[in-house]
Length: 118
Image (tube, rainbow, N blue to C red):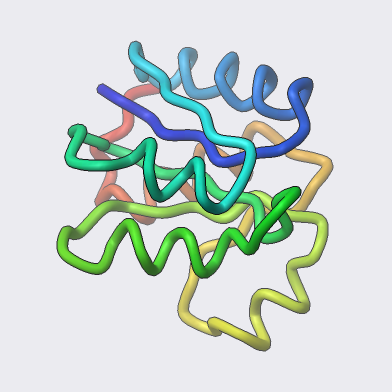
């Protein structure tokens, strides 16, 4: 399974990759900015998208909306700004930083309909 990680902090992106690997994800793409995420996602197959809200530079919510405009991709937001995100998009699934692996597993299962292995 393929995951696309939008995160501007390298250590957090690596932590997410490690956690997602334990859930059965085997292929990863990364983006650190809004523009890089939109361009990088392109037409490639993505089974899960994780996104930080604040990217340097850019906005993770805007990037997700652009990426998911023409296709349905499960999304989990990973952010330290959960309250801000919930105000802007109350229907999204959020894991608060610092990341708790059990919370991430539950969030991934929720957005994928339980497809994620663990």
